[in-house]
Image (tube, rainbow, N blue to C red; front, top):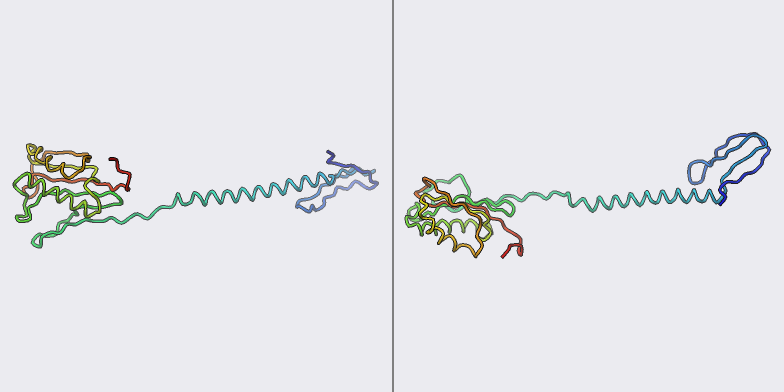
Length: 216
């Protein structure tokens, strides 16, 4: 394919530069007399113009593709507003001064359950019968869990403080009845004393899982 053509012209050797319709300049090399002029043929000019047009189109397409990618990825980096914590506070008798704690705090899908003791509502002290006390403390924990919209099976960790480790078996007999076959992790810790003459104090953490994701 011929891209250059030559012609003889009798004129002084003058270098020239002409405006090109697609931008830039059309270069013409002119030698001395007899003038020898080298020019691009029409075919060469057409190829150059097509190449420039194609290059401009590719740049435009790349820009559009980049905008599309950024628009697609943008939602992944959007930070959701944090949910406000929900505080669970049990009703207390009028003759008792307000206490500086909550029975539970729900943050997102996680419930933090404070230490509960088995208080006899008639005496405002812990029940003396260990089995009755175990039921009262577990009922108290269950009320807090239910108040947050969770169930006892949502508990994932439990800590039990006990002033008399000989009551371990009696407590377990009551404790296991609040679950349905799968139990949370647990620590059973001996301590010297608990408030209000209690033998047991129970605290825990519960996590609300989406429906259908809990193993059975």
